[in-house]
Length: 275
Ligand code: NDP
Image 1: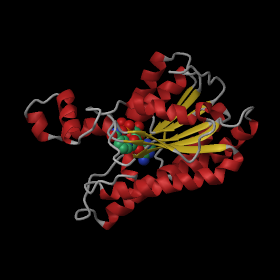
Image 2 (image 1 turned 30 degrees about the horizontal axis):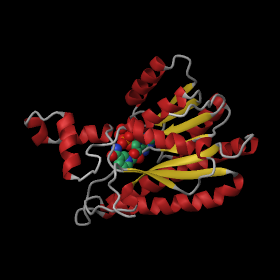
Image 3 (image 1 turned 180 degrees about the horizontal axis):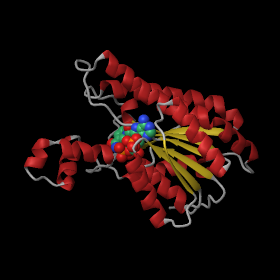
């Protein structure tokens, strides 16, 4: 990993209490940035904060309860970041989860929920943190340090019928990110995303624990993920690790990618079929 000193910069990671978000917060702290994370569950948030503080006793860290779908929560989170750190340089829109459903079993309500989650988990934090990102971009000695990075999925380009609503929303979000990038480029705020395949994380752990057959057969997590990777024809033969997604997010959030905007990095282990 290239060493980068982010002392004095502030990174905000939504959904930073688990999986990819937590691994991303860790990378920013390691690079010396102040970090703010949020999530809905207080216990998970407290556990994440404890873990990060154990590894980084000097960390400038804010862990706040916030549901990114609640406008008041998001405004309060942005207010808390401003009060504590006085700025925000990098926003990682990571909070969320996928929905497994086919067209036949997705109700209108489920469609609305999914579109709401995928769009507003980006729209609300982006709107709330934009004033601080604008200030960071203006104050920056070199353009490229104010940025937004979104966690998106390869489903945006390669839809799966068993995740019809998620795939469709992911494609729309890819378009949103492109528009945002063009709109914010004159202000020197870059906007990019990562397209992930399957990454080991809280949501996959929960699916493993809910798989009655696997539990009854005493199948280990390692065997379960390996078997799924084989069934899903992942060329690299395994799930991704949260830190592998985090490294791509870190690259796109920081000045390492200062001439990149409106773009995305594929972190899918080779699953993408298009050229
Ligand atoms: P995890 O479940 O490990 O982490 C999700 C994080 O988001 C948690 O911190 C969770 O905390 C938080 N979160 C979820 N909903 C909200 C909300 N409404 N407001 C605030 N925080 C929220 O999963 P991943 O690390 O895998 O997920 C990270 C992102 O990657 C998600 O957007 C997911 O959809 C996406 N993704 C993941 C894939 C994978 O294979 N892992 C594949 C494709 C996309 P809490 O529940 O306490 O709120």
